[in-house]
Image (cartoon, rainbow over all chains, first blue to last red; front, side):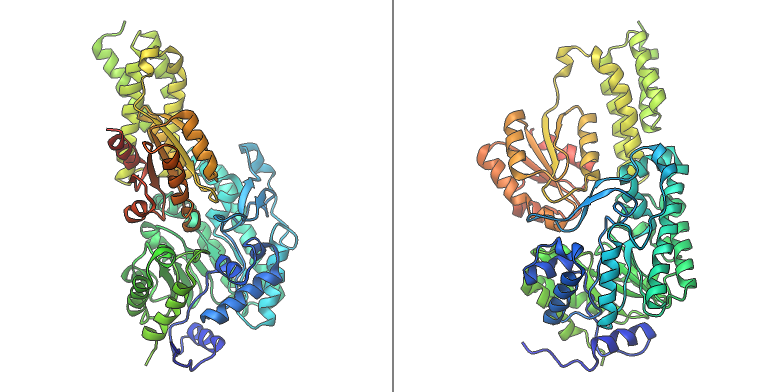
Length: 355
Length: 215
């Protein structure tokens, strides 16, 4: 089929959306590194180990499938390597992203000796910085992606250990969250000093704070204060927007998430577990809503079922007060049928125009 | 020898110690079971397992989450370590044998660990293969342990794709083996399509489904 011609460039569309001005159609937000690797014939590991190839694969795939925004670099196990542990790059048919091998904190005693990482040298950060220089050159949004505060803390000592300490040794959890929070602020400051506050849009992914793991009360006590602190410090640097990927089942946490400053507008990326009305209730007045097409349907659904899901989601969210960008609810499964990825863009073409 | 009343009192206190994730008290109470001449098997079933059943209910009603569940399991294991050496051979007759693991490509094992905990608490023999388990290893270990059930866990949509291959390989080797699947991206519909015998949405349901599968 032929797509209706856009009336704005990708950059014009994103700029207008973030400034609260009218846009021609719903943008298509990418969360697709593994799919891009397969699309251009690279191993998925390259997306995390080689900034140039990662950027190139994403840019080519986004052009092919009509994504807006721009290439992104980051992964959910962020923090393990940067704080002194080890990770392994994905390999084989079923691995999707880097995974921890050894945690920097193995015992209670290790917490006291933990140091803040050097943001210029630690772990993946030199690669992330090289990637952001490519974002700068191509005039796409400059992201710095890391875990949310709690997810980084879990990546330092393992989520199970963090869970046990929450009840038995809360001081250790607060010590790790302090380090994670200070690191996030250091990291974003480095990006802001390099590229300018108006160009940097940090992304924080917080899967480990989901209600699969934590109660809302635990979220309120251990997660919310640190999210608020790092957000406030980042916004005080002059950053205008922060993207939070509120990953997985977090419905019971949403009243707290709504208290986290994310900028004007903020960017709230939600999984399929949060329905459209709930998303608008908690984030509609303050954030552009991003999401929440179910990865299972993208991977295993028929094109018809996926098209129906996308058009229904667009209909519910396109008039969200601060805007909407369609995206998979979490990373688009790398093995998704290419036709299904095209179907998502087709759904925007058919149902996503603002007349 | 403790009176029936005293026995019930201790067993109830063991349950409470498990529910209250009080490892030290649970260990002490299980020692007192031995001192008072109470049947250790009864203490396991009515005290420790009974406590974990209450924990399961609290988890289902969303009063307990993963942190509480992990600590309750620690308390249970502390008590079990005291009682285990004193169980008679006939007490060791278990409900069934389970092989469990997170599939290849996936290192997320909290869900799998919770399932293992609930099966152990319910009196199953559990063979835990850990995470990122290759297809061949599931097949080899199932044959070696001759388990009634294999439980497969995945958190990622990408790693979930290994499940139909594992199920196919397990059934080719042993058509009688039952396969139970679970994890965030799974559903009843996907489980059926992959050829699994059952799907469980959480750790408590997994034990019930497994019991149904082996009748």
